[in-house]
Length: 442
Image (cartoon, rainbow, N blue to C red; front, side, top):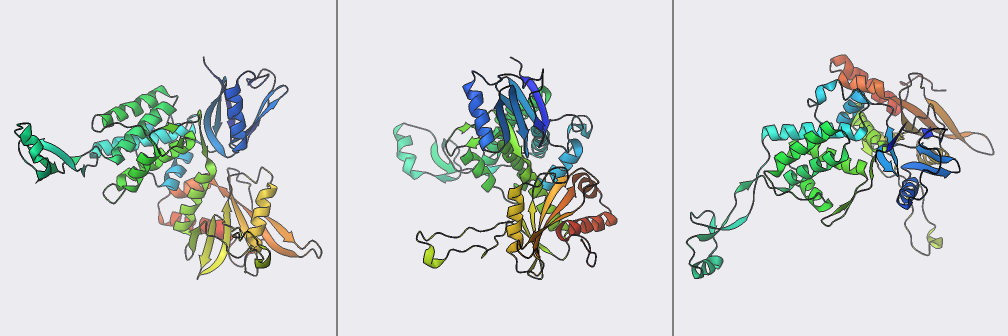
């Protein structure tokens, strides 16, 4: 049975209007769909409300696609096509390979996971063209032409069977290694995930090319971890492909076990917060001249238990902003990435409280913490909220809301000339530290 499509973008709310697929008792009589709706709501991936006249969907920072009863819900990011693909490549250090002619599919209504699958297929094709990595594997076998070391412990057994060979322990080079098995499993997963027949066929053909050279195994947590930890300078070309497979597993919401099986949720949802934080981490780290950027560094000492009133001997909670910017070993900026367009949407109280604590926890004269948020609106400007003493009305700290125009960032990253490098450095400075020195922000 064909499922009815419901399409919305990140942070959009879709109500059960008359004649829409959301109208009426959509999930009635479907306990599995009701449990899924409850789980997705509790996890904050998307809020699904059963109302008297139908379903209401409230998207958040998660994008992707999932089946909900007779519905196929697709949540798309606001930025799409080539700009999104370019930013994804940059954030996760993916190679700029020849994808789908770079014209049709990327600029159409491609789903988020299909963009990842296209890139994975291109990475796998590149690895096959270069030749799969081979490694030496310990092998015990009876050989008529001895190789390696003769296994004298097994010699008597061969003689007793009147065998004509010798038991040997040798190390032939083989493509049947963990990193190739993980890539095969990732392609199989990709072929199953996509609804695009042409893309699924390409992923399946590539998986079959790997299957002819390895012992196919179902992708599980242990196998993927083994492949990831086997990466070294000889296999560094595999890192982009394994990164994509990990992202697909995240979009799938797969709960990989440490055994031989995996449990997949009926859908593929990826948290764009992860992407946005990775994007800013690399951009600021590479372009913030004269500064050091530390990711998720703990701000210690903000909270502490009174030793005389801590009967359970618990450790105090710590604050962990996304980025600390240091200059000459001194913190000059506390930054937090929030994937929510705060130019067009209100600032949630929990975000304000969190950033207020980041600001108050600093020793600087000007206590300030900054939210970096994505936008596509050229009119977006910096906003400042003062944290005041409720009795005297004096400002004690500042929470800054600073927009990151993703389209502008995409253009800056595409340009490769000398001026572009200067522009990227200036843009990074403005994101981290605001306006140039000497210019007031009030």
